[in-house]
Image (cartoon, rainbow, N blue to C red; front, side, top):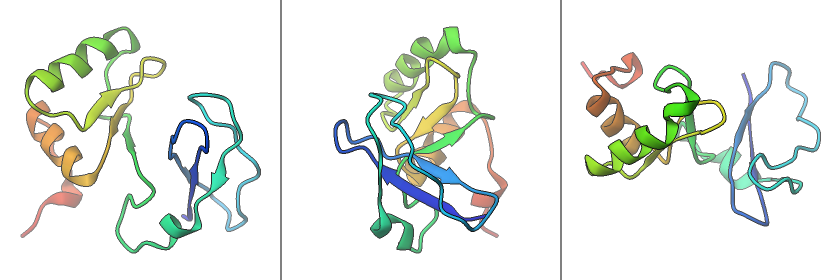
Length: 116
């Protein structure tokens, strides 16, 4: 499934878009500020996973009313690279390394990260 990367020129938000077809997505608006996103070709060409920026996880998420508390709890544990979307409750990780740290702190496991 192709990954398309975008960046907001106003607020710097950098979402990924997974498309089922190989046709590039149309114009998209930033979820954070509402401005039009620009396609970020440089990040799309990067070879590592999650190169576009933030990584979202529904499985590691919380209920939306708990998002603020969950973000604060992670910061108290010294994990600053994770926040929870107050609208959806999804966990949002800054990088793969932050995702691994946060998942371990939550007692979750990602089978893609198991080395063996």
